[in-house]
Length: 85
Length: 121
Image (cartoon, rainbow over all chains, first blue to last red; front, top):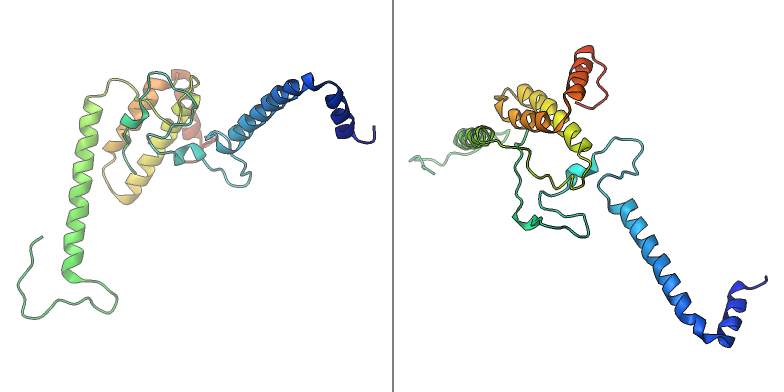
């Protein structure tokens, strides 16, 4: 098919009730891609550096929260409790 | 901070060493170290269990166990290289003994003795 977008636009014009379908499917796909990229770039267990052997989880502050939703855990009350060396 | 009376101002020498400032700063550092060591000893005495670690918030605590094992040995190495007392490192030992299975700990201890431990210490 020469232009997939042109075909879809023509079909949408004749069946406008399909637009919410595209909205929801597109929104769902976008959200899953966003979460995957958050995992790939921000997760402290992930490291893209293949040469050195960094430990990116050690760069977190003692009260830094990575999880999106925590139950029964007040991160603002956490303090640093490990000895320095 | 006490200021010693002097007719002439005490200046730093050519290399930048200030005679009295060095003495006071060293004392302050030593006092801070002693206070920190006492605080850690207090914490080790009142130890109940491994505290929540924000670096490892999920159910899988494998990395928590390994990190504390590494930190114990790194702490021993760093403090004995600096010539300081190694007792603050006992915190990491308590935590990894709480978290790690005994078979892992004995395996890693054997590996360290044999020189084949894979972690960076």
